[in-house]
Length: 259
Image 1 (spheres, rainbow, N blue to C red):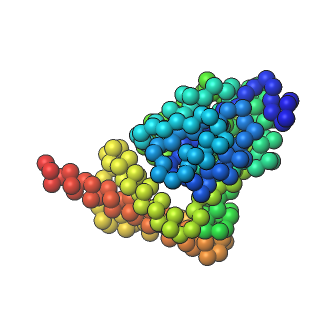
Image 2: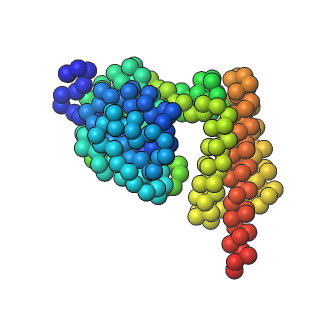
Image 3: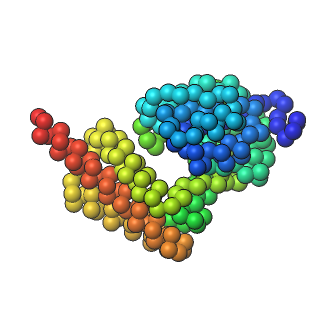
């Protein structure tokens, strides 16, 4: 053990970015102890790349072909024994750092899921399906790869997987402008993904999807226990589901008119 790092196993941190200047500094500072940091940017127009280069020499700029492909590109550049995939708006706490270092010494596990404690417009959300929100992010480099999904990509790991207990701190939505931006962006990506899977949509289906999402988030998953932000979360989740299926409906209508 040297300066809190393993001497036997090395760790590569991989991050994909685009216009993440408000978040990326805190993220990189929280993983500065890692042996290697790989950043793959897809054309930021703010100071994201400049900030990243103050923390690592491994900053690359590429085109954008979706979350899965982009993260696999970053993984392909990693050289560590273990890989930690982290988003630009996430932070590794000192407690999580210690748990990651210990996990890398586990001989019979090839990957670990890590919980996330996400912030929604100023409040850490512990209900509404947002906590513990386990995500598979730590894995042996030679045992993992990303799916090529445009959105909602996953890491496929061969071998046994464990779970850590200390969470990432996830600054999911700083303010409501970011909520609106992400709802619009992710609903567009989600509609394209559903269309590729052959899912059909209609206006009544979109309305029902939105209504059910609100009921599930606010009542069944108890978002009401998170106060006003819990209500806002349930509404924005419902809007995301509604917009996703409305956009899918319009997309399919456009295809039919071209036939």
